[in-house]
Image 1 (cartoon, one colour):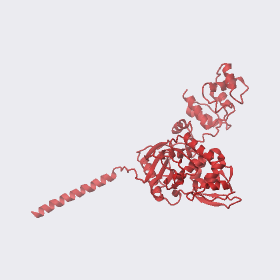
Image 2 (cartoon, one colour; image 1 turned 120 degrees about the vertical axis):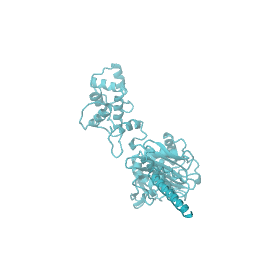
Image 3 (cartoon, one colour; image 1 turned 180 degrees about the vertical axis):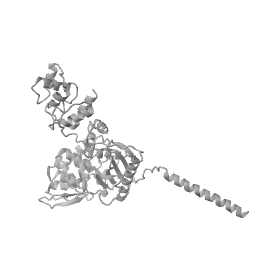
Image 4 (tube, one colour; image 1 turned 90 degrees about the vertical axis):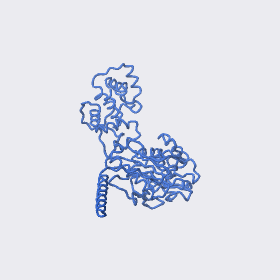
Length: 443
């Protein structure tokens, strides 16, 4: 009796373990939905850079301190107010503004002269405060005027919860009470900054050789972005292509990172950590991993687009035709301000507008020629009074009545913007050609 009970128990136990093993086997075949990573942060936001859509976040609207990630805005304003080749002398007065032991700076020599481009590398790679003040004073005349333009730029970008009172990123820890932002606002700023070729190029660089001056020898600087040195990540999934680190006691360990996969999907992470520098990179890496893995599992959508058309009024129109395969690209750039040749113009008109025009010339397409030869091939009669009224707004007006009439028709039908193309000899850009083709297609 005891023997039979033991055999029965053994059989039940065996069946139970078989079922358990089979259950585990089938479970392993089922797709596993990884949980969103837990991070130690005051705030963060992950954004699809090409669409501007927020994907994941934690307290994205919470007021935080940006620390040296504020220098991205410093770079933006400097570029808008000074050419990259402009030479700026680092003066004693600039040096005096770097008056805190908590400020990271390279200790540039007073009297040394560098180009704006050199200062930008030192600013964005080494987080150099000397360069921040040199760019502020050198591009706008004073730090006060420069900061005013930083705030104006933030307002123009729709950064409603952001304020600056210095170009370095100092905060309440140094008695600068009007520098603050949110993860949401700085994601918008980062998206805009990554549409500027100079900034995009610099933040993708791991090192830079600063040229010699009459006051100092040449020296090499390295990026503070640890993803370019010691912080490992899965580069088969994506590549980190920028941007900027920061730290103050009040802000914590801040980082704005941009990652891109092989298909051209670009993701921005604005991260404001409250643990350690190492944990900052671990958390950002996990957020990037999670985002691209979710895309691979078709849990989220990521967009592909031209990074140099972001924030243009024409962005949606250009992206629409890009998705249809009607626009050529070079390394995900559209080059919207590049002038088009006649052949390129006709290719765009035919593809978007459904026309069958022919042209093979490599001459630059100008407004008056386009109007006369390609848009209005049949005579378009407009009252002379209207023709004269349009011509009075233009420069380089053609002498021929037929050309003037067709040019007037171009503006009369709102196919071209008079404000941007008031010169009849204006060379058309790729952006203008796409917008014109779009209007023709929707007439």
